[in-house]
Amino acid sequence: MTFTKDTIVAEVMMKAPQAQPFFQNIGMHCLGCALATGESIEQACNAHGVDPDTFLEELNSFLASEA
Image 1: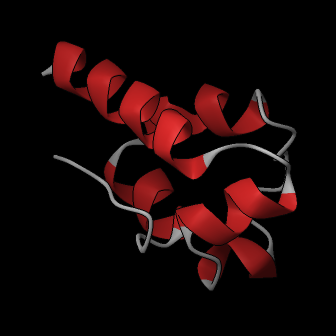
Image 2 (image 1 turned 60 degrees about the horizontal axis):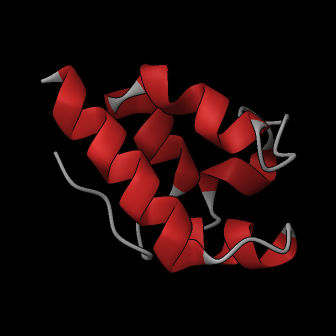
Image 3 (image 1 turned 180 degrees about the vertical axis):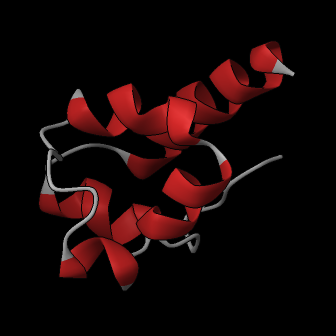
């Protein structure tokens, strides 16, 4: 499974709950709130001052190693 900048945060939490620490590490602690259901990974990263490309590279690498 590979996520993109357009993937909604809540979708990641549903499909890969083990990814939660990656979001918490950038300061996103409200993964079940209303914003998570409509905010893309790119939007969330931008709101928290994190480069979305780097974040996605690390997230997708981690998830690939779990498979």
